[in-house]
Image (cartoon, rainbow, N blue to C red; front, side):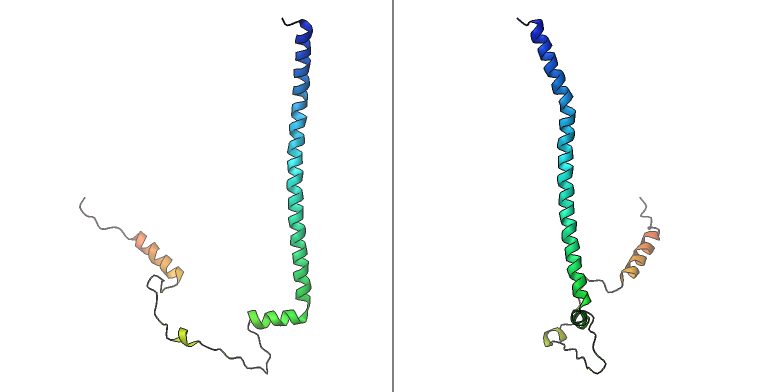
Length: 124
C-alpha cells in the first residue's frame, strides 16, 4: 500500500508547500499594495499638474482681471455697472410656504424652547 518512502516524500512535499505558503501570500499582498500606491501616485501627479496649470493661469493678469470681473463683479473706478432685472422674475414675488421665513438660528432656538416647555398633563 503506502510505503515509508512515499510517506516521507508526502511529508516533505507538505513541509515545502507550507513553507512557501506564507512568503507567497506576503508577495501577493505586497504586489496589491504596490499597485494601490502606484494608482495613488498617478492620481497625485495628475492633481499636481492641474494645480500647476491653475498657478500658471493665476499668474496671468488678464485671467485674474477676467475672474475678478465675472465672479466678484469688480469694475474700474471710471466704469459704471448696471444690474438688469428680467421682467419674468420681477412679478414673481410669491413666497413658497415650505421655505422658512426666519433665519436658521431663530428656528433652532424656537425648537429648543419648545423642547424645554413641560407638556400639559392629559390625565393619563
